[in-house]
Amino acid sequence: MKRIEFKKLQKEIVNEGITLELIEKVQSSGKYSPAMLQKGDDPVTLVKCNNESFWVQLEDGSFLKEGKNLMKFDLKTCIIGRARYWTLFSDIETSMDNERKSQAKEKEILKEIERIKADVKKEAETVIEKYREVELYAGIKKGSIINDIIKSLNPERFELMEKNAIQFISDHPQIKEYVDSIEERLQSEDYDSLYISIKTNGLPLLLSIPNDNIGVLTQFFSKDKINDTLKLIEGQDHIQSVAMFNVNKRYL
Image (cartoon, rainbow, N blue to C red; front, side):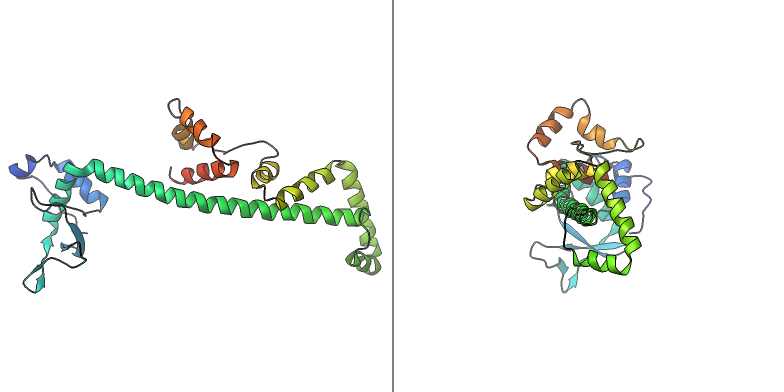
């Protein structure tokens, strides 16, 4: 919208509590609806007509008319009307905005949970697949047609893979137990345990934060917030808490 420079406000407008600072805030926000176009009027919904005027939309979706023509309200009137609305209903609007943001965050968190689960599932399947291949080359599992083909086509490569697989098993004596547990958790869809085991090396970490971005720490772990945060995560799955922190970092 076109910006208007307000150098001075009429006395009756100032008496309503409308200031030049509030007028500037309205224009900077770029939000002009709802508004109260006259003192004592009910709030109305404004719809942009052009860069210098608005229409008023009624509750049934139609527009305010004068005769057969839609009524237009100039930008200056609408800016003051928006400021007038703010002087009376800013708390309500802030509450509604916060509610909308909260609902949007909840939707993002649900999507983030599904993203994390899909990522963990894919990584778990990769771990299992790679280890089962190692088992075949190490001779723990017999009868692989693919291995027989590789061995017949390239015996030297097969011998090298076999040697490396045997060495890997020797260097990681508990790897079978670990992979079996991964497979068992995957089959039971225990994504919390999978996440901790695969993503954070067995540590129940909830988030990592760069040194230059501590806003989420202040938001959730400041002195006056930490007890509420602990109560919140106590009733949540681990991945749900991770997703919550991931989403909130995007809003900082």
